[in-house]
Length: 517
Image 1 (cartoon, one colour):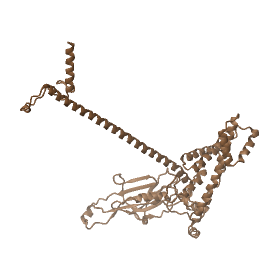
Image 2 (image 1 turned 180 degrees about the vertical axis):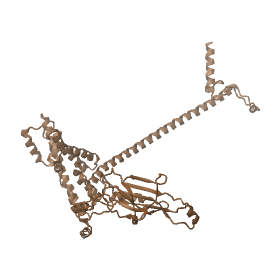
Image 3 (image 1 turned 120 degrees about the horizontal axis):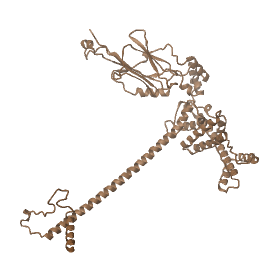
Image 4 (image 1 turned 90 degrees about the vertical axis):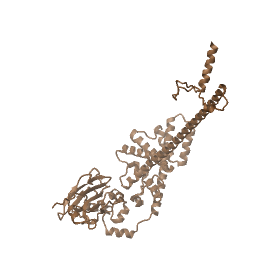
């Protein structure tokens, strides 16, 4: 009985293998005759009868071919999965490279901003404590750059650099600058240490990086003495302290480096505090000597570059000073940039640039007294000669002047009932002013919290009025004569009154008149 069951089970397994485990009741094809033998009776005509054993053998060959196909399919799927994995890995590596390049560019950008901010503060004469130390190096690297070349973190050409002279070179060394810091002294030293740390992290040139590190070492030592009372000579007995300091001051940089290397290679003695104090004094002395040497080299390089710079002709300077004793009233760099940005936009249909003939002389400005401005110029020196002696800085940027403007007038045909009855396209009516676009530039306002304003004033005739713009120092009021009509103040009608990025924009169109009999 057991043999029959085993034989029956083997037969069932062999049959299930032929049909891949599917039965008539359970198969994904919905075929209730899946295991029944299909016989093509018309094909059997004239064909030899195939035995059951031959049919079973044929079925096994078909199953074997199907298994091979399934194996090849699995291999292809495995290859496809491996290809996808390698593709994703390659994309991930490329993204990492792009991210690393992006972070490197971002880091480089922030490094550049450290020096650019310093040069801007130096140009505008609003120096921080650390800017006095960094002034000569930042200017030197900027002067060394070729025109239009951006190679280092110091790239920032300005009017101050173009007019730089030997009078603008900082002659004090780091020790003298630190000694001249007034109260609160500790806050000033702490600010310098923080600023020097930024320079150390941003600098890539080995020479300047060593300079910032030495300046930071000197300032940190002085700050520790002022704030915490930690003298550099702590750990040395008072009876020998003066002798040790005197001996170190008589050494040159080579001898100091030899002593430092010797202390690093030899075993420490019994008095470890004494050894640490001597090592600290050697490091501080080396830093001061390197600072003095670099300071002298920088001054010599600046003097050579300034001497080779083209100087303005003395005759032209004297003639310009005699012809005009007031500060030049030309636009600043920021005003030029904003003007170019707005002027680059194309004119719309019916628009045209407003000429200077529409500008009206303002009776009184009330912003900055011209006499006081002229007196300030006289203190600095008249004309181009004074400008060469004292390069344009904060006072030059905030001099009293009229603002730049780029105004547009919109004109066109008013096709009301009367004009439609008396004119046509071939014989159009006279053009009328339909609106204005005022763009007045105030990038250098001293008080940015005050928004520029405009007001309408009466003109000499009722058909016109005067629109007056006022913003405050350093800009004088400016006014224009426009057509006196009622404005469309709806946003959809084109009205706009904003002050953003130093540009006061006032755009408006006139209401159309209704013709009535």
